Amino acid sequence: MIIKECTLVEIDHLVKEYVEGLSSPFDSFLEEHILSSVFYSIQDDEKDVGYYAVHNNERLTQFYILRSYQMHAQKLFLQALERHSVKSIFVPTSDELLISLVIDQDFAINKQAYFFQDSLVSLSTGLGDGEIFRLATQGDLRHVQEVCGDFLDNYERWIEKGELFVYYRDADLLGIGLIESSKLSEGLASIGMFTNDAYRKQGVGRAIIVQLRQWCKDRGISPICGCWYYNEASKRTLESGGMVTKTRLLNIEVTKQTTN
Image (cartoon, rainbow, N blue to C red; front, side):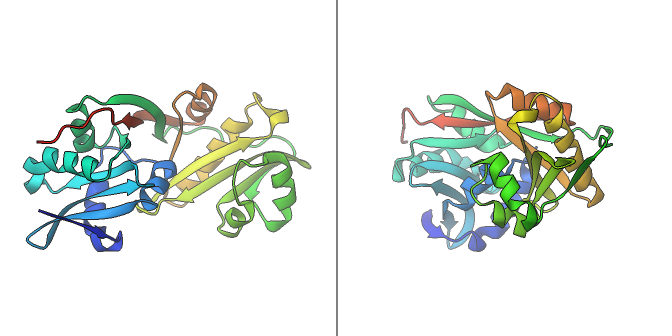
């Protein structure tokens, strides 16, 4: 079989098949790493039968083979690792093939993040006296920058895209919410929030998540999100806001490579 560098567009049909085959979706953190990776098609007689992706010349972020060619998966996987001197692999636990290929090897497994989905449990979305939750405008930019600092790299761009929300109590900015539409999965959006330091542990983060869930529901969008595995505060906030987790993101350290 032949391995060729390619564009995402050229293997779009395989990427869609891969995403549709996952047991659960993944959030924008992993998606961004995938989209900024270099893609390689696996071809048999000029037919695309699989692909993989490598981020920053060292991290494998995708590996997918058509079912009819999966008898070659172990060998092709090891060849990809050797060819690119891969040092680590991002593996969502919803990806049965890739997690199985990793388990076959003597690699160190590190827990990177939780992935969350909507619990579908209805929660009260009522706001308190003097509180408002809405899309941010350019008029909010200075206030958001002062309160949130370097939480995001470009607040103005988020506002222009209509993906940043503000949560006020009178003139006080309690926090912000984010909704980022998936570029790989139609009808999904990653949600997130930041709470003003002065209002933490007061239910602000929970309220933002509840509002974001409702915003998605009203538009027929399924909200997803994630947080660092060891951030227990964020995990509790997301769960209290109606999100649940059953899948993880693993960061696999390639400690040994064996070629057949």
